Amino acid sequence: MKKRVFSGIKPTGDVHIGRYLGAIRHWVSMQDDYDNIFCIVDMHAITVPQDPRVLNAKIREFAGLLLAAGIDPERSIVFMQSHVSAHAELAWILNCFIPMGWMYRMTQFKEKAEKEKEQVSVGLFDYPSLMAADILLYKTDAVPVGEDQKQHVELARDAAQRFNNIYGETFVLPEPLIPDVGARIMGLDDPTKKMSGSEMGAGHSINLLDSPDMIRSKIMKATTDSRRDILFDESRPGIFNLLTIYETITGEERKDIEAKFEGKGYSDFKEALAETVTECLRPLQERYRELTAEPGRIDSILKEGAAKARPIAEKMLAEVKKKVGLG
Ligand code: ATP
Ligand code: LTN
Image (cartoon, rainbow, N blue to C red):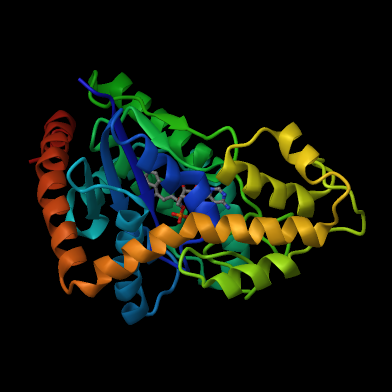
């Protein structure tokens, strides 16, 4: 029996290379080794205000990009969170077991609440409970995510453990799977901040559907420092981030990359990086164009995915309800 992997992506903003290098690429490469479920978490998206038409289009775009990146619906379940109502139901039940104190410690909530100010919704605060439900419904062993999501996966594990202590073995305890390189790609405009789908600045992120000209222009303008040498030095976040992107895509050793660019300037390196990113994204963009040329293809894959996910989720939910004494 293969171990189960579950992961999710929030359909807001653009699919940027942080999301790709930190998560999606690994989901693609581990498909044969695990039993995989990937979810477009549209109910997480509405924890902050969304334009309904944009959200609806983004859900399809994100699903299309996962498929274009190499997620194979024959080997992996791909579906939308709102299509399987067990997610919301289990989130409610977990709400009644997760102490407020655990939620207050979530750093992502603190950061996002700071940005939203008076508009902070109860849903944003409760985000980790819905994420725990996503993971626990499928008896997930491993959750491949970027560094920023580690704390949420740990909360899901703690919630599972607490429930199991009260009601006996019910949930599998999930482990976060964080890549060694590329787990935290930073913004090109500000390399001290995580590259994020919620940042809107034009030069902030490289997106999977960017044209070669856009990619080049964003990389050439990326914030660096006034030094010249091209070294993996964490105290120089701009060049360190660009080198990390290069390392993550090429898979080359750090010392070999430093040797390759020894004596060269930042603009030579940036040109090489733009070329590397463009070549990495080219086949994905072609597949995306093919997929979207077939009307209804993405919707039918999402529908089939939900039909496969639903019975698994409903079985778990029924077990939980019985243990708690509901129904
Ligand atoms: P936001 O920044 O708006 O909260 P997000 O980009 O973190 O959103 P998702 O799109 O749901 O949220 O993230 C999908 C996956 O990509 C997650 O596993 C997340 O950890 C990973 N990821 C997102 N941004 C980065 C990044 N800059 N570097 C590495 N991994 C990332
Ligand atoms: N919070 C995650 C998205 C997410 C997720 C999940 C990831 C929602 N549910 C379950 C892994 C497993 C984020 O990346 N922002």
